[in-house]
Length: 465
Ligand SMILES: Cc1cc2nc3c(=O)[nH]c(=O)nc-3n(C[C@H](O)[C@H](O)[C@H](O)COP(=O)(O)OP(=O)(O)OC[C@H]3O[C@@H](n4cnc5c(N)ncnc54)[C@H](O)[C@@H]3O)c2cc1C
Image (cartoon, rainbow, N blue to C red):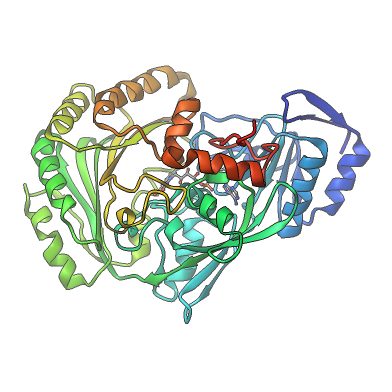
C-alpha cells in the first residue's frame, strides 16, 4: 500500500503514510482492499445499483479481532466509516465515499442448539445462511423474505417476515448480541447485560456499534402451507377489500402480503401467503381467500419453509436501480384501495413496479411501543412502494413514478416509517422512523457513541450534539 487519502468524520481529506496503513493491514486476518485491487469493485457494490461509492479501504473482517482493529483505526484517525452486513440497505449506507468499510460479509457462521432452541449467527450472515442451518433441525425464526438480505441490518431495524404474526419481529427473537462499540470494547447486550444497549439494538439500526454475533430464539417451523395467488388487475379493488377484512381477523399463524405489481407479463394483484401452523388448520384458514374470485393462479400447497423464503429471490435480484418509499397504514380503507388501484391501472409502469401491502399485527402488536426501540407496533399493514429499473439513465422518470404513487397513499399513512425501508429522505423522516423512542435513543447514542463514529446509517445524533 502507498500513502492513502481518506475522508475524515468532518468531511475533510487526510493523507495517511504508507507505514500507518501497512501497520494496520498487518493486524488484519481477513483481506483489506483498496481501489484498483482485484475484487474491489465487487466488494463495493451493493444491492441497489443506484449506489456507486468508492471507499478508500474495505476491510473484509475474518473475526472479532479484525472488527476491533478496524474500529480502533477509524477512531484513532477520526475516519469516516460504514458497516456492511448483507449490503441490502436501499440507501447504500453499507459503503462510503473515501472512508473505511467494516465488511462483515465473510463472517457468516451459524450454529444451532436444537435442545435450547437457539441459534448463534455471525454478523455477516444472511437469512439464506440462517434458514439453511436452522431448517436442518426443523427450526426457524422471523427473518427477511429474500435469502440474500443480511440478518444484522434487518434485525437492527426491527425485522418483518412471514413468521412475524406468530413469533414477532426478528428483533423480538433476539436473545443477545456481541457488539464492538466505538470505544473498542466488546460488550454483550441482552436482557441481563447492558440492557439499555440491548433495548436500542432492537430497532435503533446500526447506530450503536458493530454486531459480530447475534443469538436468536428459534421455533419449530415447517412444512408450511404457502404460495401465491394471482388476481387480474380489473378485480383488484374487490379483492383488496376482501383481503383487508380477512387479514384483520386472520389467525396469528398466517401472514398474507398483497402486492399490486407490474412485470414483463403485465400488471396484476399477487397475494403471497405463508401459514406456519398445521397444514389441516391452514387449509381451513386460507380457504376463504383462495375461493374469493377465484384467483387465476393458485400455487398454495404444503411446502418447506425455505421454498417460501425463496419465492421472491428472482424478482428481487441484485443489479437493478431501486427507489423505495414506505409507511404504515393508519387504515387501509376503501378510499385508499380505490385511489391506489386507479393510480396503478392508469399508469402501469414497466418493467417492474410494486406496491406491497405487508401483513403485520398479531405478535408484533402485542409488544409495547416503548419495550423495544422499534415503536410501530399498532399498524396492521405497512405499505411499500417499490420501483426497480435496469438503466441508471432512466432514473428520473422511475423516481418520479415512485413519488407520485407514494403521494396517492400518503394521506392514509401514519407519520412513522420503517427504518429499514427508508431512503435518503431527510432529518424529519429519520425522526419519524424512530418515533416515540427517538429521545431515549439519542441519550443512548451519547452514552455508547458520543462522537457519532457510526453515522453511516439512518443516523441518531448523540443527545449532546
Ligand atoms: C431485496 C430486499 C428484501 C428485503 N426484505 C426485507 C424483509 O423481508 N423484511 C425486512 O424487515 N426488511 C427487508 N428488507 C430491508 C432490509 O431489512 C434492510 O435493507 C436492511 O438494512 C438490510 O440489512 P443488510 O445487513 O443486508 O444491509 P447492509 O446494507 O449491509 O446494512 C444496512 C445497515 O445496517 C447496519 N448493519 C448491517 N450489518 C451490521 C452489523 N453487523 N453491525 C452493525 N450494524 C450493521 C449498518 O448501519 C448498515 O448501514 C429487504 C431489503 C431488500 C433489498
